[in-house]
Length: 87
Image (cartoon, rainbow, N blue to C red; front, side, top):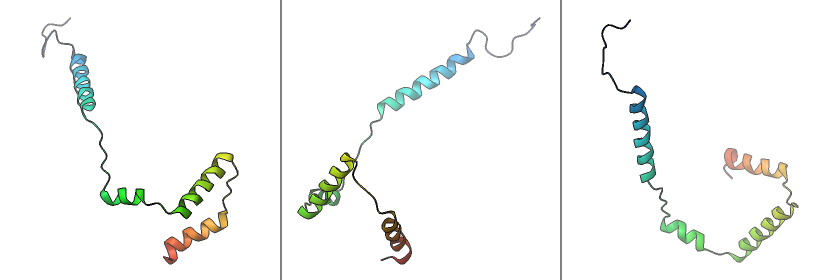
């Protein structure tokens, strides 16, 4: 048998938690993601080297056709030289 009631009576303790989550959701909806691309990055993007573009197109075609093969030994050597020998 409960004689005295401590704390506020008639309040749903879970309602406060629900209100907190609703306000957090509302705040999250208001923020927008933005991206800024530097002018240098834009210049690099617009540079077109015909030989490089041809090589990229050739590799893309091989990947889409499933005929692109990787030389694992050469890749490992290149990674090693880049990080260890700084060549």
